[in-house]
Image 1 (tube, rainbow, N blue to C red):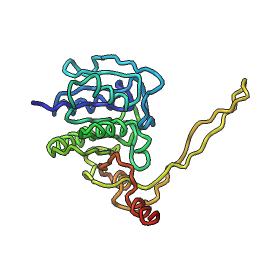
Image 2 (image 1 turned 60 degrees about the horizontal axis):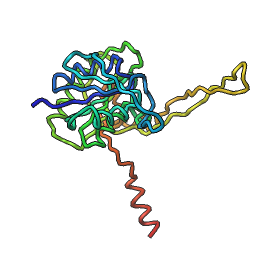
Image 3 (image 1 turned 180 degrees about the vertical axis):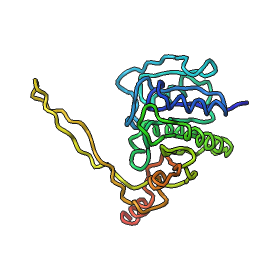
Image 4 (image 1 turned 90 degrees about the vertical axis):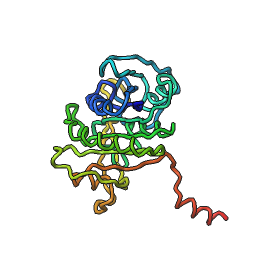
Length: 255
């Protein structure tokens, strides 16, 4: 029996990236798509509690792929799929292909990663795919090739407790050196807010901008280093936020 593969993203069900990953996933199993009906970038793991969520079926990927668009967040779309669309747990959850990188601290803001994490919460192997290009017409060919390799590896591994954050550099396939399994880079966004005063109201408005700073640019075991050196970065992630080093220290301090 072919595995069931659930696909979502945060760029919306109408994005080029989700179409690309559906094409790859169809080689491995029966695909069901549940994704937001509008862009939901940087929504992280938000869920809709103060309003109902609409759900509409679309014929976007061919008659062999059931596809549903919801008015909620990426996490909402996965929850709906598990609770309403699917009649059994899928064998794999895939999120992406996201337009723009999701390495380092971006991981905690990413709706793409959140959709994969929601799959992991349900005990299903999950993968988030991103390309380091924000271009709506980005070339996904190299990403598709590596996505195929990674999907096959995860399915064959039979690992249930696995969630991967994958980033692919926006370069030609021939220039990519391979896959580097690595860790999340320590870094942060230093935010700035541009103030705009409304001409007719006494209310200021602010646009968020900022600059990313890598705290460990010399480290060669990080996702940022991998991408900057033409590797596909693969970071295993988990839902448990516990700081185990601090846990041990606190146990000693509070005895």
